[in-house]
Image (cartoon, rainbow, N blue to C red; front, side, top):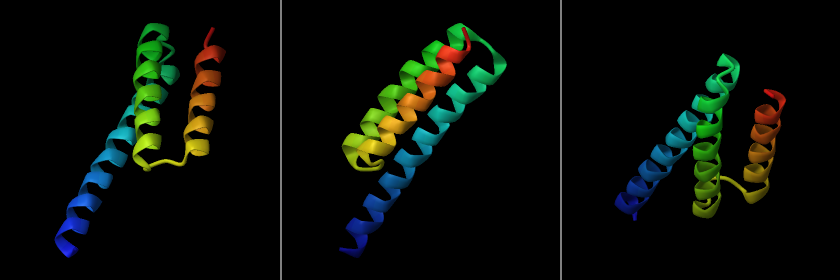
Length: 78
């Protein structure tokens, strides 16, 4: 069990790190004001958030809140 838990903890850590990186890429694109880059990063971030919610890394309400927040940021760029 110790070995299995260590592997699962590492997988969860990698998934969380990848999610955070994707969200940071979106935020940096919004701050830069690049609409095309932000739209592409938004699509990737939404997919990443959904996958994290399915895997149990994020609660479904937390995922919904993140997606809503990103959508508002993207729409405010226009």
